[in-house]
Image 1 (cartoon, rainbow, N blue to C red):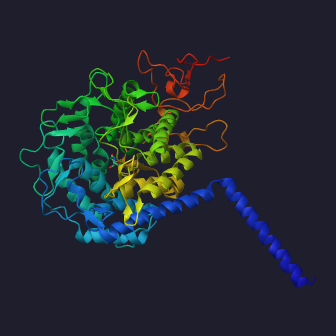
Image 2 (image 1 turned 30 degrees about the horizontal axis):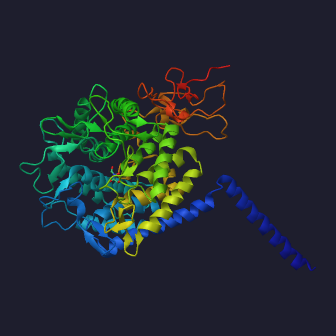
Image 3 (image 1 turned 90 degrees about the horizontal axis):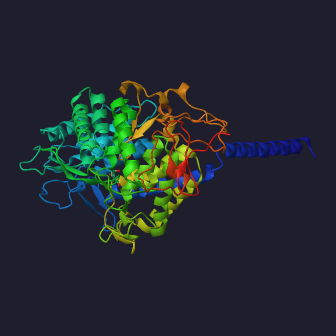
Length: 576
Ligand code: DMJ
C-alpha cells in the first residue's frame, strides 16, 4: 500500500471513530434525541399548516373555517353562547395572528414574527364597535400582545431587526385602557362584557364567572409593570381579593356571580369551566409577582379542591356551602390540573390524574368535552372536541418535571390523533361529535397559541433555556423577572436548589416545594423516592378510602409520603 493510500485509510478510520464518538456521546446526553427531533418537526409542520391556511383564507379576520376555507370574526362571539346583540360593523382583529406571535417566537421564526408585528403595528385598532368578553379578550389579545412585546424586546432573541419601537405595548396599553371601565362596579368585580368603543353598555348582563373575575392578574399585572401605570394591576387585584372574600367557610367558591351585588348565582363548582384559570392565576401570579398573599390564597384554595372535589384521580363538582358532591363529570378543561400540580411539586397526584385523562383520550381518540362519570357515558350535547390544549399542556409539564419518556409517547399519540382525525386540507378542524368524528368548521386560535406550542415544547424545549417563564392560561410566556417581584421566591435562588438522592445531577426544585418539605427523607423503610408536595391533603371525607398510594399525599408533620394499605387506608411507614 502506498503511503498516500495508507494515509487515506487512516483518515477514514479517524472519521468513523469520531462519528461514532459523537453519536454515542450525544445519545448518552439524551437517548430520545432522535425521536424528539422527529416529533418536534412534525409539530412544527402542524403549526404551519394551521397558520398558513389561516393567513391564506382568513387573515386579517379572527379565526379560520378550515372546511370551507373562509373566516369567522369570532372575538365578539367568544364566551357568548346566545350570540345576542352582535354588531354588524366588526371585521375582525387578526386574533389568530396575535395568538400565533409567541408560538412563532418559540419556533424561532424571526422573519414571520417581524412581519406580523409590522402588520399589527400599522393596522390593528381597538376603536371598534365590538362587545367582547373581558376574560377572552384579556387572555387572548392582551396576553398575546404583552407576551410578544416582551419577546420582541428580549435581547436573547433577535425577533425584530432594530425596527421595533414598542408598538405592541402601545396597542396593549390602548386595549388595557378600554377594558378598565369594566371594573367600575360597586364591588370591583368586573362585568363579563364590554364594548371596546363605547364601554359597558346600558343594562349590561351582571352575571360573570369566577374565572372571568379571577384570571386577569397576569396580563393586567404585566401591563402595569411594563407601562408603569398601576391601574391595570390594581383593578385585577381588587377583583381577585373581592372574589376571595366571597369564599365559603370551606374555602370553596361558586361558578357564577353578580358583579353588582357580589352575590353568588351558581353555588356548585369544580376545577373546570368557569373556574379553572382562577386557581391557575393565584399560583402563577404568585410566581410572577412574588406576592405572598396570593400564595396563601392558593394554598387554601388548593387544599379545599383536593379535599372536596377529588375522588381518587378524578375531580367532581361540589356545592361551595356544604362541600357535597353535585356533578360527577369529567370535562376536557379539567385536564390542565395535573400541569398546575406539577408547578407546586405534587407530581405523584398529577401523574395519576393525567393517566386517567389520557385513558379517556385513548378511548375516544380525543378528549370529549364532558363525560358523565356516574353514568359512564358522554354528555348528550357536549360530545365535541374543539382542538383543546389541556392534555398536551399537562403532558409537557409532567415531562419537564420527570423526564419520564412515557410522556413523550403520550405526546406522540396526541399528535397522531390530531393529524388523523382533525387535519384537513384547509387547516385543523374541531370535532363536533367524538363518537362519529364528524368535523366542525372551526380552527380555534388557541390551537396555535397553546395546543401546537405545548406539543412543540414537549419535544423541543430549547426556548426555555433563555430563562424562566410562566405561561398564561392561553399559553403566552411571561418571563419571571426579579424586578417584578416584591421578593424572589426561595425556589428560584440557585443556591437553594435541592439535590435529589440517587440522581447524579442537581435537580431544580419545583417552584414551591422549598416552602414545604425537604426532598429527601433518610432511613425510610422502603427506599422509594420522595416527591415533595406543597400541600398536605387529609382524606377527602370520612368514607373516602384510598386505592393507590398516590391518593394519600404527604404527611404534614413528618413530610413523609403516606401509603395506601391493603385495607384501603392511608398511613405512614414506621422507621426501623
Ligand atoms: C383557552 O382559551 C384557555 O386555556 C382557557 O383558560 C380555557 N381553555 C381554552 C382552551 O381550551
